[in-house]
Length: 190
Image (cartoon, rainbow, N blue to C red; front, side, top):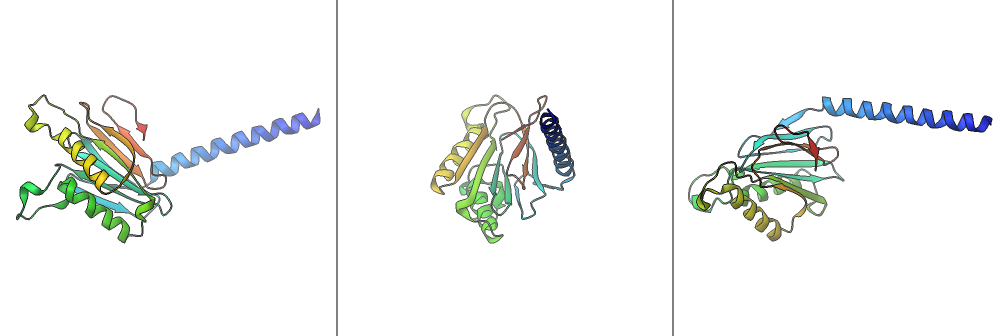
């Protein structure tokens, strides 16, 4: 009988420690600094205890890259599929998927990430208003990303695209998880 009491108290102690650790982790996660990625922008972080975040992805695509071994992450908020319509003009590379993705991957590798260890997740590409095919930017962005991901052999592990909602995303650089927020719905992780 004494061994049952000891075993029971042991499990209670473990349960108490686990709940304290979870509480501590949640507190640390809430206090982690956030790097905001604007529209037509990209950012990287080599600091594990950071978030990269972008807001209100409608037809734009938010693309995250994360090397979990080195805890190096990056995020792109691209507006349009291709810079080819703007040849000869000075462009902002992060505005376009076909120029922003290679540029972000180059920056990640320069920061110490290894391409073979980088996992990719993609969000957005919504069609918020009813329009004809010419203005279906969300669909065109998704199609371009699909093409680029095959050409560049990206390891895409999660898709949260299309629909008629905007999304706000936060990449946890410690874990590689992406927290997704859709208006009027609870957050979820991809």
